[in-house]
Structures are given as C-alpha cells and as structure tokens.
Length: 140
Image (tube, rainbow, N blue to C red; front, side, top):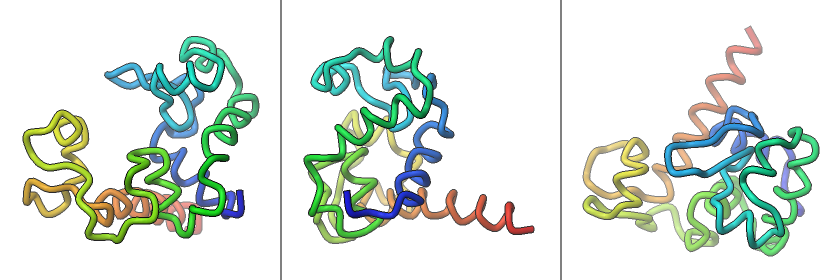
C-alpha cells in the first residue's frame, strides 16, 4: 500500500485495540471497525470477521485499503480512509461533521475544542495522542 505498517497498526489500535472480535454500538466489527455494508462489499460479514484471527482479518484490511493506494499520503489519510473516506487527501481544516448530524453525535469525542465541528486534524490528533501515549508508556 506504500504506507508504514506502524501507521496502520496505530489506527487499528485506536479503532479496536487490535481486537478482531470487537463490535461497537452500531455494529462495526473488527480491527478497523468494518461496517456491515463494508464487510458485504468485501465478500464477508461482520459475524465472519469477528470469528477470524487478527492475522486472517488483515487480508480484509488490505482489501479495504487497496483502492486508496497512492492516495494515502500521510497518517491522516490512512485514518480518513477508515473513518470518513471523503477526508482522504483533504486539508487538516476539512470539516468531517457538524453538531446535529448523526456522524457528529457518534464521534463527538473527537471534537477536541468543543466548537461543534470535527475537523480532520482533530480526528487524526486523537489517534496520534493514543499512539504517542502508548509509545511513551512502552519506552519506560
């Protein structure tokens, strides 16, 4: 895919704690929290994904990200491909969602400054913060 494997691992750790069986409150499942429609598009189901090992599920992570090859220019684009594909290639000030939308309500914890808008930079910063926290914790 032309991206650092550690970056994909950091996104998976943020999304699922690298637990292939993790299911969130809206039914997204697995390492990158595949939505049921996404799983279906990849020829599987979230139920099947949840039964897989992390190693086996990585084939689906790869297939999901493959269409973005060449467009994943930085860490933010990798996360956008998973969270909100419309954000791939957009600037950091790109607004993903605003208060009042269902997407905002599901992701309001990403609104770092509490202004009712979630930008690409805010969403990505949350992933970076978790990656850096655990990176420092392991180094100690």
